[in-house]
Amino acid sequence: MNIVISGGGTGGHIYPALALIKEIKRHEPDSRILYIGTEKGLEAQIVPKEGIAFESVYITGFKRSLSLDNVKTIARFLKATRRAKRIIQDFKPDVVVGTGGYVCGPVVYAASALGIPTLVHEQNVIPGLTNKFLSRYTSRVAVTFSGSATHFPQGKTVVTGNPRATEVALADGAAGLASLNVPPGKRYVLIVGGSRGARAINEAVIDMTAALSDYPDYHFIYVTGEVHYEKTIEAIRRNGQLPVNMTVRPFIYNMPEVLAGIDLIVNRAGASFLAEITALGLPSVLIPSPYVTNNHQEKNARWLEEQGAARVIIEPELSGSAMLAEIDAVLKDDKRIKTMRSAAKALGQPDAATLVYNELKAIARA
View 1: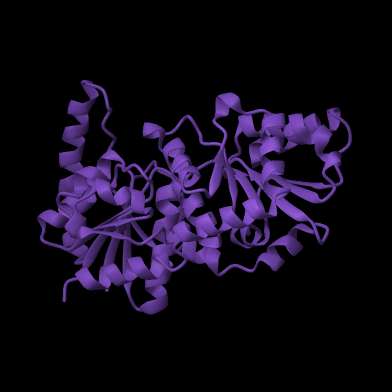
View 2: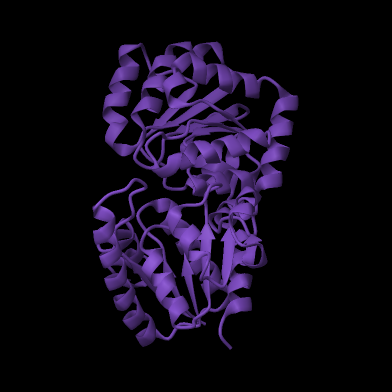
């Protein structure tokens, strides 16, 4: 197949696209892939490094309130759609895929106007404006969580999960723990605030380090984010020595392996991350970021909490003692761990990449 994929702005839109590309290449090594993003988005840095052909269009997002800027956005959308049409006509794809972000709007809309089969993938429980708009025109809507399906047309919507889940489900947890050189026979807690770290989570962890010696059966693995690492280490040492049951890293490059080896995760509530932990059946304490569009992360986190797979702490209520209390409440209760694992696993789709690939095959032009 010849496939155009578009998605951008954040890693939550880009990494599912890359996972899907890997799955396509696994089935069809000779397939041709073109990625359309924006010049200033994260995708412009990440995608070319993967050896994937890249083109760009210029587009900005709509504001949810009335604004003169929306008039300019409409003009940019029309211009970006014309450029996307030219790119698509030159590439001649069998199908066009959108994985989220403003850039998908003109790309998927242009493909639909040209009569080319299209699929959009929604990662969040509550859909974004772009995918809700595109669902009127696209051939298929694939959603990560069943709770999203009611927001889209029934006849064209399928629950597939997030393609990132497939990569994690195949990971070697023992190798992940070995790479961190942690002591054996513990219950492992991974705390991370995203690839760049989160100041509020860092402050809570620093606050609780003095109490960690009271939990010798647990081993805490903390990922600060590279920009926060030095200051976090200094702050921990001001409270005393680094606890013996704590490993601190600025970044973890083999995250799928590490996730597969731990007992509990404390993290933000980005959609791709939630797809990963549900694929593994991993219990979680979620601290949703309050700084994302439409409060997506809290809605994602609350969905998992309602299903019994997670506990949620909103950032205004976050402290070291609150975090440690939630961690201990889960890990000291074998019945709760088992229940949360089962609930998370029930939400997961470890074969998500294959399911999305199968949908592409079903709608692709003969």
